[in-house]
Length: 287
Image 1: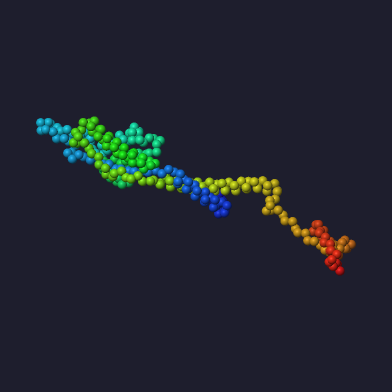
Image 2: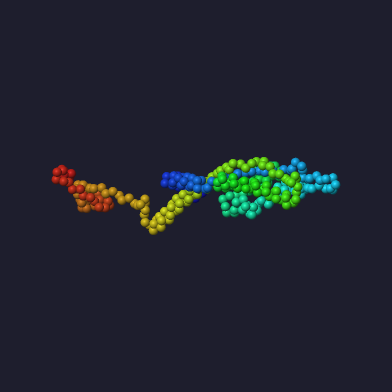
């Protein structure tokens, strides 16, 4: 309680409170504007079954038809979407798209679990969700175009590699086309808040340190018995005496028990006596 009471007391002081507020505002603005702007774009694609189905009908003399292997799983399309997501979430594919580990661009490819709009239905549909975040709108658009093309190319390559008939190839439909890159301000707001808090904490800490330093300097002086400027004993004023009062004090030396004797004792107690001598142009005060 004592610490916080001291801090609040410092904040109320004119030479502490206003400077701390100004420093907090300056640091908050600096944190907000110095953090680089970032932009984000999203796209959602879904896998579709071909119109002819997953099996190509053959001539009656053939015992079985030609089948697309990617449609023979349970929840086939969802399984295929999972294969595409895993295949495109590799460092090699990211490097082909232009996303490096230490670069300014971040790429996310999943089934939509990070998108609130798809979170409730991503478990029921074969969605492929793509999100690109970077420092410029142009870079976001280019990376998004490459990522979508890479997903479609990966699907086509796998179906060709499995000798699936072209008429049974799975298609990709853009449910939500790539959105226009939008600026993100969350990072800048966080930087501004952190800068403001840093200004308040640093200002109050500096003021508290100065207060403790002054207290540490005054404590040894008080312990040594050296009075400070505020505790010096005031010197009693010296009142001047007239010649008549001075003569009355001298008469008191002959009679220590008389009234003049007490006056002389009073004069002795007061210390030095300032003698006022009348000038020639003024009447003698003893007459």
